[in-house]
Length: 440
Image (cartoon, rainbow, N blue to C red; front, side):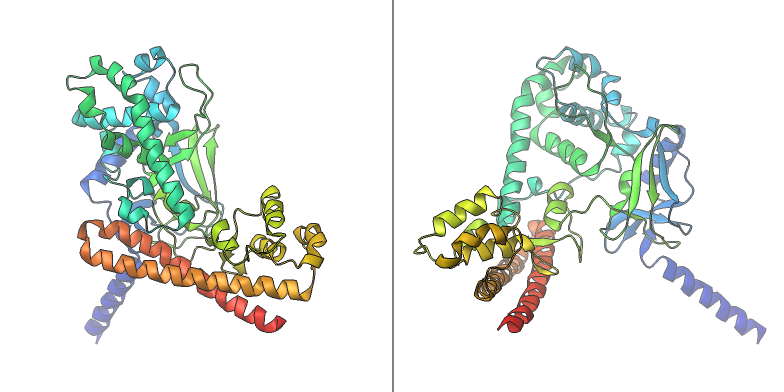
């Protein structure tokens, strides 16, 4: 009997142990992380609670080996571990940057350093960090045109602008890259190619922490606010947690404190800010499920489609909305149409005899029951149109996933964004249906 109890106890312990790791698979035994931890330790970083792990929902992240309470320090990364423009200036690139006119931007200096260190391979003192950086990114700038075309219109426009911005940075930096030839045996044209710059730009755009540095004359006037933070940058985002972060002048370390609890063996999550999914995809290359900050944008073109061009006051109404900034940031969210969207709809729905009331509507007053009802009915029509449009795009994505195997990862990301949009629109349609029933 004792024997069987012992076996049962072992089984229970094993089940408990397996349950602990169900959320994430510990990766700290992998050579790349062993080397990174050793490298960080040499720079003064001591940490016994965080472990690199692979998580089902978020991919690579950090797991805690002890329960965290509100107010606990998640991580304290010494200044010596941070990669900033000071790091760049103290490298062999420093003199070339200081002598180059017109001055390069802090962003370009960091991009150049990353490309040069990656090219240096084994000789780079930053190799243990470079080895754990992603090889590829999913920022819109890295997406194929066919995939970009499937994005919602506001994001599509920003994605195209992001792509053009990196192309322009590459074009305008060629002469500077050529000036670095004395430092390299190989041609700088081969080392500092477009894909290398795109990779470096995405690394800085998606992984840096905000850290303000004093302006130096060797840099352009663009803000110098970037710092790459090895290991700390493995922490993933959740819109549902709160943290406090900043550089601690006393400890000379960048620190993050949690304002929430985190159970033992769970993934430690931080919040990158109250961003909607379009912003998260644009800036970081991912989408958050059930993001409370997410919304679906209504363009001015879609909005105006539902109002007759024969309305004699239409031009004046559009002009009023434009002058008071009511043609931008019109959205559907988890709680239905935004106040801004309903206000724009109410102004556009004003009858000729009500037109003089437009100021009151912008302040939140009611013009008439008819006006309220028409605005809600139009909101429901727009919502239905966007639902159908989103469903059509989701169908296109599933067809493309079958035909274009090489685009599967990028398509899955856009599919996730569009599926989240669909959930929001369906929720808004339900809310509008109840409101329309209430006003009927």
